[in-house]
Image (cartoon, rainbow, N blue to C red):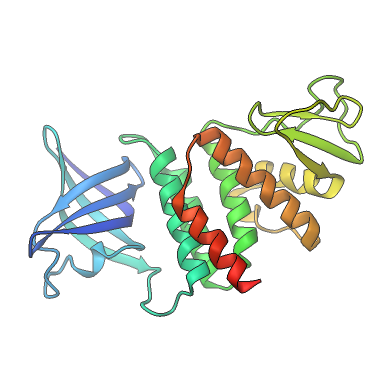
Amino acid sequence: MKTETEGLILMNRAVGDKNRLLTILTRDCGVLGCFIRGANRPGSSNFSATQPLTYSRLSIFRGRNSYTVDEAKVICTFFEPGAMDMLHLALIQYFCELVMKTVPENTDASQPLDLLLNCLHLLKKGRPPLLVKTVFEIRLAAISGWMPHLLYCEHCGAYEDETMYFYYQENVLRCQKCYREGSCCPLSKGALTAFRYVVSAEPKKAFSFQVSEDTMRQLSECAERYILAMTATHFHTLDYYHQAAALES
């Protein structure tokens, strides 16, 4: 069975001298591992369209136990050799690893694909990496079935307080009065408002908010802890990102 779709190449690996094994976030079939013949030759029409971080139109044949790309055509590319610094490269690798962890095979992946493409566009335009990372983590968690429960204190129903506490492993919110020991992130009024906005805003407007540096750091720490708790995974690419961020600070 053949499928015509679009997809972002997350990874590729040479198989012999001529062939490649691709990991692709496809719009219609989720994350797929696909074989493609002859694409490792610079003269191949599929060479450019199967480079990492290239968004391509794809013709994919599904066999009994495998997928093969018959044809690939470039829509746009986000990889420019030498153009990305260590911080941006590490962040994008982290995004790709998160997607491979959270998006299953054979599922409609329009939402995570559009989210990742939007983040790549914004990084290319110079938007702050910390902002893009934070929104990506929150939105990816929400569309992956882990919608953060941020509406009110789970114990007394309070909508807001000077500080609210988000228990990221349990996915519950508590006010100061109902605080208890546990794995949680403190959220100021500004951080909680921004968190709620990112979850509920239209996809392309989710990045359109401004907060202080302290509030952004608070929100970012909470978003990261939440996605790590939900995926129950240690991402080495996230370690590289933090190392790169420390070098730039």
